[in-house]
Image (cartoon, rainbow, N blue to C red; front, side, top):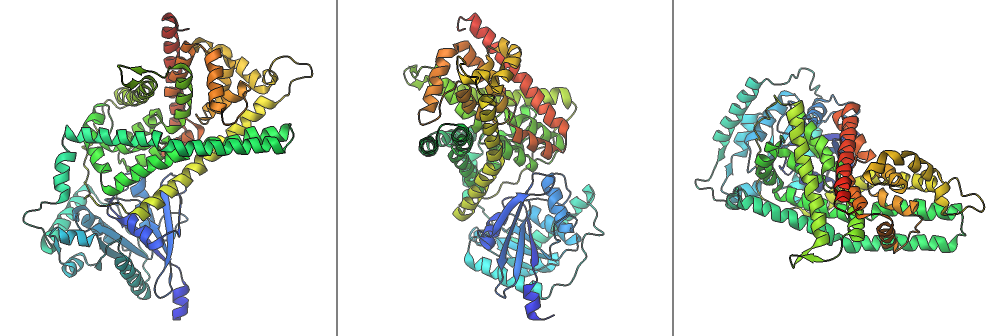
Length: 628
């Protein structure tokens, strides 16, 4: 085989490492924009693949495997990493070389993982990342001695520095030119607990022989953690960070949201001016344009909340937040790791449910999946804002607190409280005899976020949100338009044309069931597509009340509702959306994540029951108080 043949062959690398080891930063530095994110078949675990070219011109495919501490396969992430390394993942090429990324400042668990990887027989290269930080802290590592002790090549790298990346590209050429064919994984068996302990003892021995720690470690991390992890001050800091994050979501996003809303309103007006009145104009203006706009208008909020989450993760704070929340969440039957998925669910339940794969135990993971939809996602914000603006006066209480903002805060608290209460009930009735495993978490060192990695992460997640939510919401808006437009009113008909449509027929058929909640047929029609995507309920209300879209559409809807609904009905409507059955795309993710239709159905039914009972109680109490 000639040199040209070798360099034209595609070489497959797999990045393996513990969470927060700098693995993803190295992946982004190597591949740049030449990467794609999808899901592995059958699960919602992210598959991140990229490509780069070595100095010798060799084409390399690089796979960033989910972070893991072991190959035991206790979670979907670990299973994916194990199967890919062993070459047993259907449709995935076996790696020619495994790059194990180790945080040079914190080697203990990663060395055990390296010893596990060595047992697979797969060609292995260990990359000591953040080596410069370790040296600054007085940590001395004998790289040659560590390589000899492990029996695998060990190199140093600084993932965010160009020199470290180029060195890794050169080493890839060296390994590819001399790589023997290895049939790995055929004889591999999972390690028993005693074998895991033996490997950890071996890893500790290697560290003692090859790593010298400073006599008086007094790092920035330890000094900051003394405050951040304090049981009182730490929780106060966490609350402040969350307050700033949600203020940013609601305040910073507003100008961009208004710009997007005005742009789509102008586009709809242009269509109305260019095209004559009729089915085509109505379809384009009220179906396609309104549908796409209803998705894109919330994109700034999604970007901002993911920006905060990624920055906090990269900085090293998210692990501390999970540690702080462990005691509070443990009282409700939740694992400390559930904090991050539930926090993500404030943007959208889909990434929140996907994030539960960091939870090892299936029961803990399933509980978190079941309650994640109760968190107040951004899709509820348009509904809350519409009803609060229409029915709650814009005045202050106690001299300085905005009443509308107080009601919005109360709705968020109700969502969080209901999620914790639901978790407690699930634990009490379903898994009363189950005791969660102790929460063990390795806290990474603090480091400055890599802006390039953050930008790539935010862009990737924005695209995923548009792909998942956009198609569902767009199709629902088109469906609403069709139901509200056909059949058309007969000649000489009195009243709005929508009264003769399929939407009116469906709403009036279901109205007796929802009447005890104070809901008329128009509200009932809006609830149906709202189960597919909650924010569609706002557009649906505008449609069923025959209100034209445009720049002042939100105000017009609010005025119509204030004139047609009682305050008791408005409060009942808000109570419904605190617990409203989750959107269709999230239910589909629950089915894929749990591998069972049963839990998808359970989620829908229990949330529907909660919504109905909460609305019934709210409406009954409000009427008794004279608000009906």
